[in-house]
Image 1: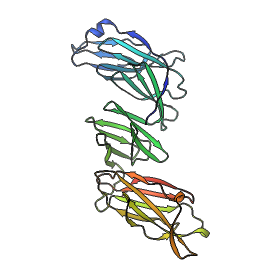
Image 2: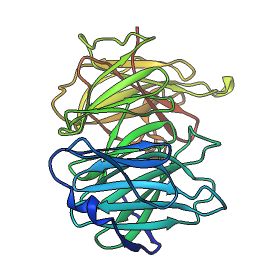
Image 3: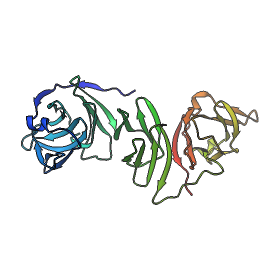
Image 4: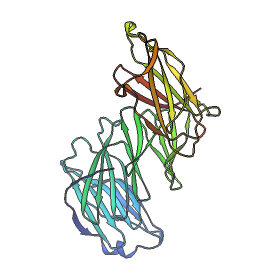
Length: 339
């Protein structure tokens, strides 16, 4: 679950009466030299008076969300929510941000603003997501967020844990195949989320919460016609005097579906299969090693086994799971197989 930490207090002031009175029909807001410009249905434009220079703006009727900063001194950022129908604004000084002062994304819905701030000196790292509720007048924050967007009023967070990049939607996790400095590229038709890194773009259907496609300008992915899951396992830096013969049994949804070939611990062993793409599958790779004294293969202790994992195969792609064993535990790398 996403947990936010409460902080801060909020101030209230009113918009000019003429701005509140002319709301109606289609309208637009845009930034010009740090000021909010309101384009009215009549074709007339006027400035929206807010304190400081505006750095980010987001409009979703009937609210306008903005981030501003005073041009002089060390005053903190301000996060504001303008109620265009009632003519009032909630705003809050964002103090105690440390080095996380650059706006990466601002969105909002129903009078609740979501603001992602990053450290400008390390733009490839995660930042802090702040949520300001103009209804309850509370502010919360969560760290470790690379990017986000709102879908059906719920924030979808792009996060990383070790080598794993994933989407977090209200405590539901979807592992992605991207590896680099991934960010949200576009959101189409209120359901398709395009996420890109330096090489590839992955398409996620937020309605079904699954990855449906991945494409690249520089690499060509295997189409997954004969198989769509490839499991590879090997030992990292095995000692010559401790080499052993081993293999892995593969279980899918609790049923044994096959095994890898047998090989020395320094060599990779591989298993390929095809899974249904309409739902999640539970995968378990079970390690077996040769006991030379007994001249038979034995299942290793649970503490040396890989953890089971839940996967959702992508359409027209081969999901590659790489298990690397360091003598104590396995670590996992997920990627899509390329030609």
